[in-house]
Image 1 (tube, rainbow, N blue to C red):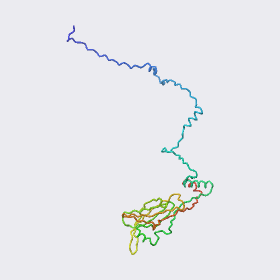
Image 2: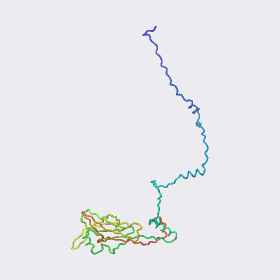
Image 3: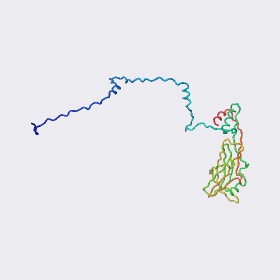
Image 4: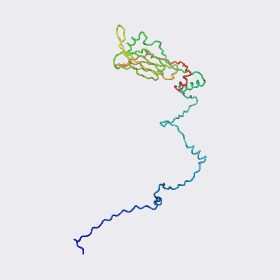
Length: 268
């Protein structure tokens, strides 16, 4: 009979190893055991059925559904379809016809001639050279002094009375008999003091403006312009006594040397 005070021996803990994971038979069949070898694992050979080439009818049917589209960098179409009615002539830009005519002349072996536009003032005398210029300037507060014409445009010089420091001078011009017009600002050049009648003096400011000439301007086209002077909330105009300043377009022919013809083709 055991007693409570009797000493019992201690029980030792036995370590238990967890069971190994079970591998399904199907996986064991798919992954055969490999030994210590450097050879790659064998792969099953996939059998494919041979396919015959498509017939000519099937190829035609395939290519009929293929569409070719040309687009620019923005994805927009490069082509534009224009339908012309009977008796309606298509509009050809002047620079395109010019290149075609120039190419025809080069093909024929003749010397290349180009027509360049230039503007010529209708008035024979510059306003600044007129004896009554200072009187007109004192009366109108603004007056065109002179106009210089070049191939790339028109440069004008105008005088205004120095009525206040804050002032603005602009030129309003038109090539369409005032059906439409454009306005450009003039830039300040210098200030001066000019002698006036009866021993007085005029404090004037000089402004400069530039009027661009459109390329391929047709002969006979007229450029009209007037000068506007804004100061102290009041506008003063110089419109050539209500007739506006006018310049007429003319053309002159220029013969291009043979050694410059190739460079002219690339330039234009």
